[in-house]
Amino acid sequence: MGALMKLIDAILFTVFLIIAIVAPLLDAQTCLPLGIFPEVLVDLKSWYTHEYGDYLVAEKPHFFVGLIWVELLFAWPLSIASIYGIVGGKSWVHTTCLMYGVSSLTAMAAILSELVGSGKASEKLLKLYFPFMGISLLAILRGLLPHSQKSKSIGSRPAVIRKKRA
Image 1 (spheres, rainbow, N blue to C red):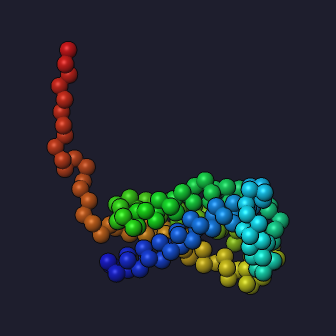
Image 2: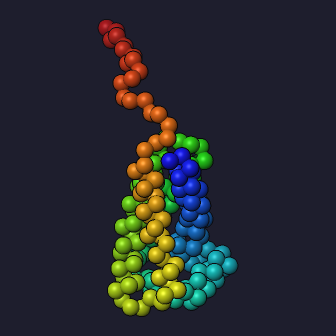
């Protein structure tokens, strides 16, 4: 189980690192004014949109813009916290992974439903988005797997009792 956990952590660390970089630099262009981004980043986003035919990024439907806001305000900070938790071996990293995974899975269900249902998505675009569903499930799995470290149960330490002074 320890080797599996290390593999999952390595994969999630890499994904969280990519998200920590991509979300504020590229995804944020979907809902923030382009004038605040360097031209090289705007050009990179434009290249991606044309190369993969990502009509969601190009057309910016309201549901997609809303999901990007959720990513920026919720998932992005969780990815940064998870990076710290994985590197530092923190006991709470399972919680951040679970929260990220559930949020991402929900977003991917909506996005993939649109991509598949509309018939507009190319196979190349679907191959780009579908792995994120797997990453979401992996993050959820990481959040649900038991800790490798023994945790103390609540109440195992004697409580400190203070006397009230009159």
